[in-house]
Amino acid sequence: MTHPEEGELLALLDGEAGTGPVEGHVEACATCRTAMNRLRIQRQRVSAALEVLEAGFPSPDGLERIRARAAGDSAGAPADAGGAGGRGGGWWFRAVPLGRAAIFFLLLAGTASAALPGSPVRDLLRAVWGDDSPTGGMASTDTSVGGVEILDRASVSQGDGVWLALPPEGDMDVIFTGPVGDPGIRMVVVDGGRVGAFARGPAEFRTGARALAVELNGGGAEAHLPRSAAVLRVRLDDRILMRLEDGVVEVAAGLVQLSDSVWLWPGRDP
Amino acid sequence: MTFEELYQDIYPPLVRYCTRLTGNGDDGEEVAQEAFVRLLKGGVTGHPAGLRVWLFRTALHRIRDAAKVRANRQRLLEIHPVLPGGDSHPGLDLERQERIESVRKALERLSPRDRELLLLREEGFSYREMAEAVGVAGGSVGTLLARAQRRLTEHLNEEDGDDAS
Image 1 (cartoon, rainbow over the protein chains, first blue to last red):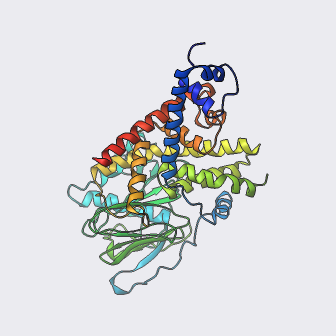
Image 2: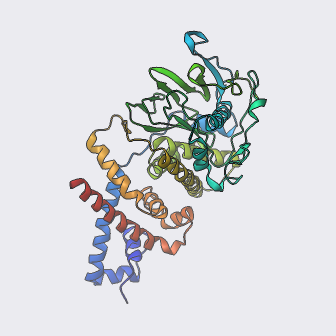
Image 3: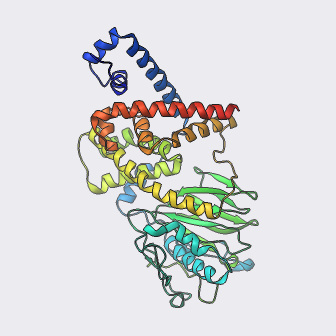
């Protein structure tokens, strides 16, 4: 018999090959025993290395969350959760469902792309969706990004709600740029279930107890967290720029540079 | 076997597998949840061993899809680089963090298929189950695994060498 292939030796080592010609050959062949010993050492090294990696910790309410999601009951808190802070202090919160916040930020991005000289917003959007999006990238009329219709800015007025339907399958990113001193904060909605935030400047991402809390000091970080479970607060200059709780986004309107045609709107079920 | 029993048996290892494959605990659990949600909504039934393969395969496909999004995000970050900062693993000691980083780098140098197979083996999958989950011929698993573990060992050695230098 010729020497067994490496894969056959490993199968023997992994208990996948019963007693047979391969095992008989190895018992009689010093070359194959040496090869098998090498595979064993590699296998042990790989197992030890992979054991080091984070194992992840299933959340205690995992089963309940699965059931809720399967039942289509994962929409989160009521649309208008009543933002903290009210209108005082020069800035205030309005609670808006995440989808509305997303479309708002799309609108904001669109505005910024037109208003800021050399703004990279358009490039950012194009980079995220690329040319393989359902619409082939950002439409020249800016009415559709990644298959999501952007309403005419003039049609969005305060008091009106706009609901962004996130696709049930696949991924979609929504990006906004920070309006104050260009902090470079960008929010990414991933497949309607997770939210990520990016920042170039000083900012703080603080999430729920089981997730991470990152304080930035001129650096940057990326935080991904499950929307259904976590709390996200983005601080800027010790003020909360936005926060996300129970699927509801609250935005500090005073820190957001609104144009005449872009408004925050009260949360209201679509 | 009830759904609760299936959850108790398979959810923790699925979260672990997805976490190690994605490199992120939250992502890992999210993907694991999605797989279970699809199982529940789809009314998928079968033998527990078959359901385990189904759940891992579903999660695997989801992670592969997400890789495309990550690639797009990477392009975005290249346009507007985000400087490294913060503590990505609060509470972990520095030495352990470095070790995790080293293994993570070595793992990421493998092809996705090699990563998937090695991590499935660590979860106790048989060759036949691995073939079904990953979508390769059953007879090729031994060869693919041997090559994958050799490559990972080489990458680990290189990473360790980098750390030592």
